[in-house]
Length: 296
Image (cartoon, rainbow, N blue to C red; front, side, top):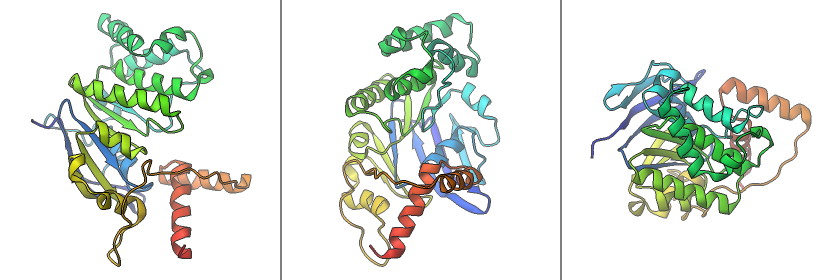
């Protein structure tokens, strides 16, 4: 099947630091590709480059053979790419209905009959959004906000859907429902690229998986072709000096509450902003580096 999206030799740098060194992948219509790897591996940055939200240093991103690099994020969205970022990114002060309208506006379809039909389809898929269409998005639960974020992307009727950590912070029941939705969208012909922390569930719905480590692809192929060592090396730090720990954990990431002084939190936020990353991602990387240096 001909690829809808092709990423070839992608490189992205923040300042002088290469966050993505060499990433290549292809996604066909009706296919789900899971992008896996530890925090700081370059997963989120890859999606941001595809949707035009960060500038690539080198490589190619093609949609139906058309080059995307150098185009504005708005133009890329109107070519049929919808991006659901990590952290949901809903407009908390706007109602559910107005958040969905913002999705139409971004796709240039606000006020059209086709746009109204797309909103109705989303409300059919997410009944809770219909019930709360006049409620401020910021007052809803995390799971409801995530449904809204995905719904806002779907009203664009994209050909390619980019999902970044859609399951973060959600209950297992909500997560299971979202994975069912992803598979249904692909079965209806949409191409989906998802960055996901729940590795086991992601691989159950994915047709292809790409494993990143330090900004490069270290393994790729159908989920059945990837060994536990392929995935475990990326998450658990396999090196040339020794074998990777076998078997990535089922959920790949386990959360540990850590308390920081307010001044340290603000320093972390400023540093993350300068690097174009989230504070959580940077904190995780710094913690992993500290543990590695300690030899624990």
